[in-house]
Image 1 (cartoon, rainbow, N blue to C red):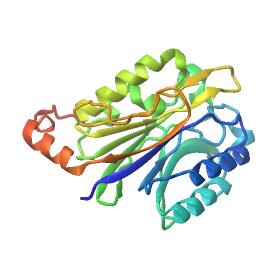
Image 2: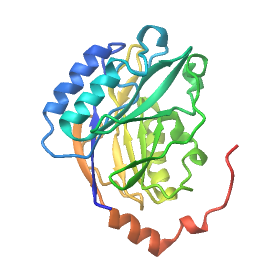
Image 3: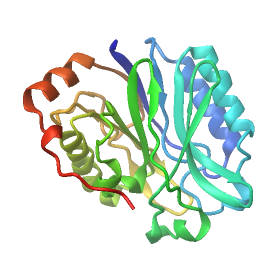
Image 4: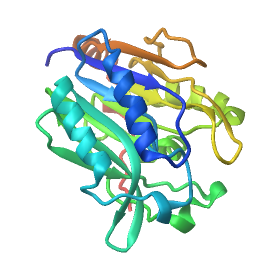
Length: 258
């Protein structure tokens, strides 16, 4: 398994403006200086965290999916982030993982955020997703999922835990602590990408996007609170060496999800 280059993009979002956000991220992609394997965007990166799903939702093969496929092919890198999808009669906060050949995998957010009424608008997913890419096993999750460690439990020997989020400034201390904890307890790299700026509901976001290694050390270096693009190399030998030496996952309690 070769090392994996992950680019995190922490940015403001244009409220309920999919086309404006696609243009914005297209321009950011043009500034990429390093070759990369995966580009990670925030949760609901085309709209911000809105409950106005009926007005801004897209079909599973809508313009943002097509845009992601085009950009992934152009950049020869996978692109991931969540958007609002209408699938049949239901709305989903759906993370898409689009590979350079256009093949697209999806994860629907399991834990809808009741404090904002997300559960009243969006159907919750009920399936864990594991993505295999360039020899790495990746577990994608979305924002509020971060508060529920059982859902992230590393029973499948994944290598990377990936969270995309709109996590507000007032609770960012929890974001910092939980990202680090998920890395340590699962002995996996933990990637968390959050947004910045003010949304249409008046909530402020200060980012704090980061990457932690299997020991809980922060390996990203960019500023917590400003907009930034950073590419971090994840080292496969770091995972193998520490899991072999410490064996914490071998001693974990057994359980079954219901």
